[in-house]
Image (tube, rainbow, N blue to C red; front, side):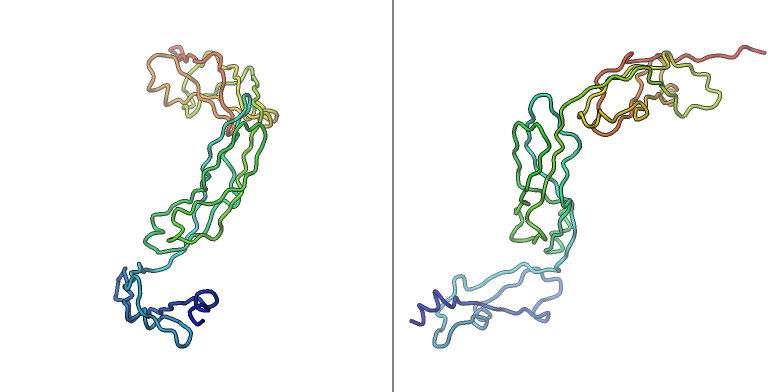
Length: 249
């Protein structure tokens, strides 16, 4: 009956306290011998241990550290035709506290979620994702789940005409003439982003340093757009530059 109660009501425990004196300086592995295990075993009265399997245990020891790292979602997403995923996935919270051996944490710069698979998306989605437990026995996490938000929008396009081409970083007396001085630009993005886009959000330019290094007289303008907006078509795709010479006095 004592063994019956031990098995179902009072499972045995082995408690070992490792003092600083027992650990050598810079020691990383500590062995618990049979003698130490016998001293730490906790059993009811009149029950005694006859053996241990294994009779020696080895533990990796070191300084416990804590750090906060960003969370990277692992996504496999397909969208319905005519839709686009705008921006990067938003994770809430976007980071997690991890705790473990300091030497191990030094090599951990981010933490991944478990793989997320979504098919035929056509609208924004919010998913609950579990954090990966690849180091579950070594590193402790402050949380196990996060929310991942995807901003899926219908694709839209818009054309802007007569967008001025600027000349940047040019000296005051550069005498450079751009031909043509304006272009048309067709852009693509999510319908919500395109609906609030205006010409002031678009910058088309040629850098004077590119002209100095160029010998053909033809350059492709550079375009700066808000995030997640892309250029679909630019007309003309290239422009000429001409150096104007002042008449001799």
